[in-house]
Length: 333
Image 1 (cartoon, rainbow, N blue to C red):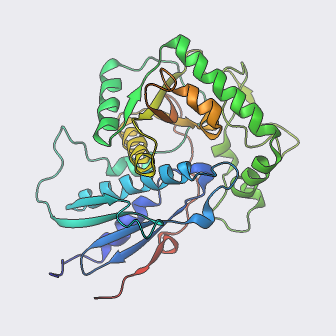
Image 2: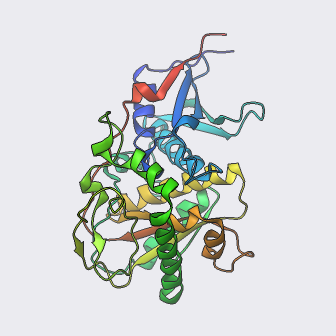
Image 3: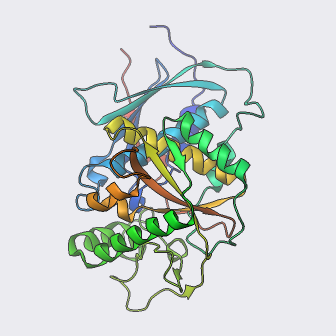
């Protein structure tokens, strides 16, 4: 095989960008291997970082890995390389979720119609703070929808009545999560930074955010099972903008596509000055998840609820060092 000349700094740049992706409970369930001879990354599942009770089928793990895969592709393109990806390339190796080959140098930078989203990778944070309530312009909704379609998913903006129904389902899931001992124990293990011996896991209080004083917007409460005091409550936006990410099918490849679509939408939203946070609770209960689609059972499979709006930036979650996620370099063949 003809060897591709790859600057040694490029793999580090790509992996650093990849690990900046969001993941459920900040588990960061991914690892990477590099074949320098063919300039190919293997993107693998770190199953030991999965959530046995919250995510028994691994759907959220695949979404998380899909998000890091999108970041890797964006970083490769930013460095001037054309990333070619294959999802689930080896049936006999189910832990290998994707390969990304840097197929060749590209001389042209992204055009005005294909925004370079690399800088947005470092500015994208979850914002669990109140948004202003300013409406989302239709042109932005259209652009975000195009970003989802580019990755094999679609983005649905429900009307206010339907949004209220989505939030009721989320609130019911949040209620269930709070009284499920296995899930709260699992959440505490991964989320509460003050319980963690390592500095690169868990979530700081600034990320956990506030609760909605009106109890209209059911943000995940990471603190009720751990702290005697509750974080402060403030009024949030009265008409939240919720986007539902949907795929036609519900297989492992669809979960990976949904993760890439989620991150593409989120980076584009960040580039346009929007903030976002995720409402994942109802997706963790199969009976509730089924009713998140526009016409349950007939119009695809909901993969994520995304809250969008204008407001504070939020705070970054800690990340493992890229060298810890780079599992190794494949030996020359």
